[in-house]
Image (tube, rainbow, N blue to C red; front, side):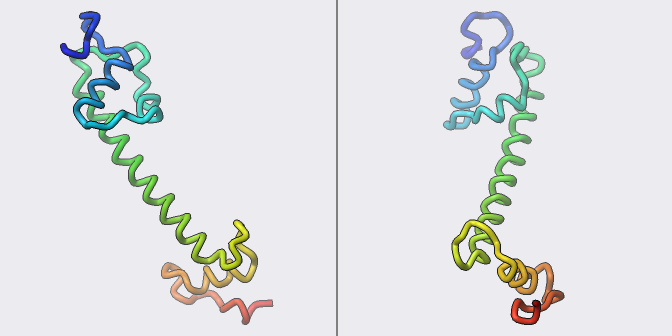
Length: 112
């Protein structure tokens, strides 16, 4: 009720965002609100389901951010010359030394 300032029985996207921010002490990111596609608002009877979708999205978003961070760290680890690209020898080094390949690939000095 508190966030339904116009007493329409429907929370607009901005009203929903204000509610989420109050509950979580963090402003909801635009991509999460876009994902919910609540341009027409959220009715009271749909609120729990919408909050559930928001929470699921945020969990997946956090996992995507963690995977991206890991990818960047791995890339930087093998980009020895800091060129922003992996050279052939750096790719071979990555393939040989990466835990998932378990040494299946030759070392860089063994490849022409």
